Image 1 (spheres, one colour):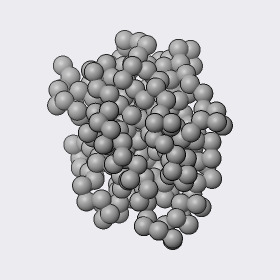
Image 2: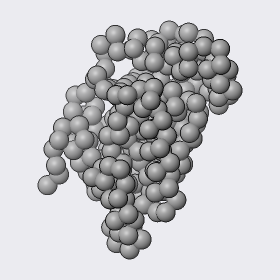
Image 3: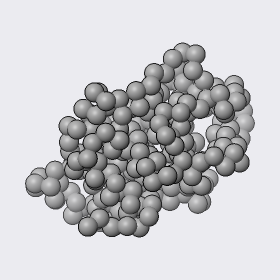
Image 4: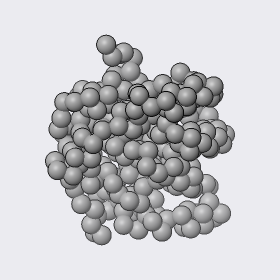
Length: 258
């Protein structure tokens, strides 16, 4: 079973859209996936038309209150389950820091992942992380096998990607098996001269081949969530949904798009 984190300390890079559509493609291929939402905005449930209520048990309850894993899981679509972050997760960071001072750093989240793996219910566990280099994100990296970094093809986007790459290198000291699976350009425009220039710069980064994967800019993704309460891959056949399928085919099954 693979554990993949979608992470970038910069917001507005379509991280949740990438996560949920990646999962949608896998689900249609018969894979069973658990998404763990470690972002306090709780956007994953919303992406599938579900609400996060104050009573709903989430990641906060698992980490800090030792709640039962089965009580935190919500089925949102065929083959797709979600553990939300929980309403209290936005107050977690000071508690996490105190936990690091008093105990083994980040131990509980890794324990939770190991417990889930023992259930043998899923082919994948995917993390949607918050846009920050926080103790929360660091703990996710320590519990993951691979990282996918979404970024926008503009100068600030490249800087955020470089910063995230450095952050991942620090996490590797505590999790040597961690590797960058891909760097995915989002909201791309093939006609943009600036993007072409940035692509050339991106080739000089540590893992250049990974920087060439891209998801085009499209309003259809927003419309799908707003109107149909599902990721675009589950509602439409268009250029955007095909790009998500091509991405998953390449990264998970080594199938190149035609």
